[in-house]
Image (cartoon, rainbow, N blue to C red; front, side, top):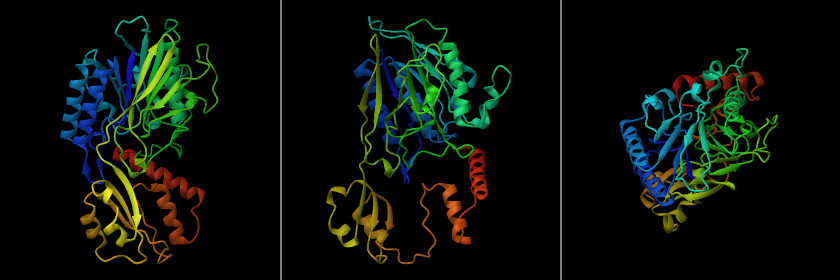
Length: 401
């Protein structure tokens, strides 16, 4: 059986103001071609299908077109991420066909989708459990134990409770069944980029990989770099049916680069082949519609060199000791796709100046830096905790996070 694992499409996201719908559409073309070329039996999309809870009309149309084309070819299973609205993405999920399953409901975590392969001799019974993004504050009341006690207020606790439901159902399945779990979370050991949004609760955003013990493959979303995660990043008590080597745990990564921190990280989707030998994974390279690069030099060198980067999407650092006249206009004329232009002299001209705040800066760090700048003393533990709580609540009320 062939299964394609992808995630973090972020339909509707822009890159420093540049509209990406056309490039996201090109990825959908590539996805359809991959499904045809490899005779894929199912496509798994592990969250952050949209970039925001209330997507634009153009984004909705692009997803509708993608699902129409993909479901003509194969089965598609989707779970919501922290950018998606579970309610909106999962609307009318019970009316979906067998070829389109949106697993957005916490109450359905223990009700897997059974995949049907092409019927070859190596086909094994494969079931897919969908765990939507679990905001601890929103879902604890739905994940109570037998005594009615909710899990603790943390990502680790709610994921553990969800996986307990998965393992209970899986324990009743016939021997030889392959269990795949789709989840959207920050799992310890993962390499981050600047384009993932903070999901901290109680100051902690990471859950150990060990919460996923007992299944065969974990199709993760949230982190944007393709990567495998060690299954042994924390202690756990092994149940009767645990895979002693631990499950395959992978992030498929986003199909496009959404920050300059990803300029050297190739994009791909993950192709799973499930047969009598187990699960084999292969990375299928995704198209690269735009070249990202960072160039750092004095203005004179920028104006005469770097010809190979004329049409790249650039982050430019101008290193002249003094701010050059007409810096922004001159750089833009030379490099039409320069998207992030800053003066970066080798030595700070005024060390007492207010620190420059970049878009990807951690809001809590910005707040503690401001306290230090104003008061001349480091933020106290209480002040840091209050700032973290304020950021959490602001994100929750804004619907982003």
